Length: 325
View 1 (spheres, rainbow, N blue to C red):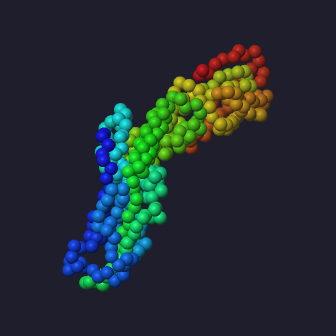
View 2: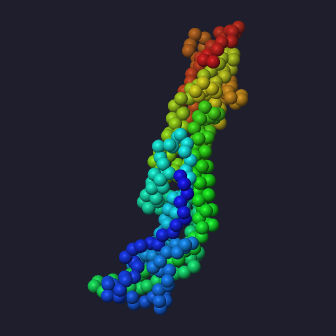
């Protein structure tokens, strides 16, 4: 998208003085200066003019501040060169600008938090202000009209455009880098990756990219359902287990709970990607079903695995066998 020439808009509303005194529906009973400044009803290069009328001076000031933020955001967004990746090609740059401004208008405080330069916009930076205390001629209602002249030179505009584009590309790169779930190495990494996606989930303002990042996060949330446990017999008092995800082992810092109908001294020890389970089978009886139940609690769900073994005397001379590996 070609860059457009930088422009600033004056906020046009019924807040401005009428062209003739006879057309005014209010009476000015107090004002900050004898005469309204020249910039009050005009727009000039390098500045933003915002006006607002409210029941209190403070409310009028806050509305002016939001107007400045919105005008700066629009002037920046209209000059953004959005990337054209295959993932988001359904949305054009203009569509994203419209969707962003619509969302900002609907929930300015939330969206403003995702755009760093918005936080730096403050009424302390204005180089001119003017206010009037007005009384409606028919209702006698008192209102306050407040106007500000905010410096916004072309150099700052260019800098903000570059900052916006940089952040936009960083967020897309973040999601692209986390799309491949085959590189997950541990159970704990699943939640870590979802948390890494949150800045992009908060930032993306167009529906297409919102669906993209939310879809990636949802796929990670489903991963625990694909985790399985496989085990290997070492000998009659040692067993090795491991968690598997999509054909490869993954680690976990969460130790499983071990229970048995007869075995004692149950212990689990990490061994690389595996977990070594040791136990004592002296109290187990030959001819009975002797087993150890292994239960992992992963992401709020319990993943169970059971292996069987023989009693101490019956187990002598048994050869090593494999289960599931």
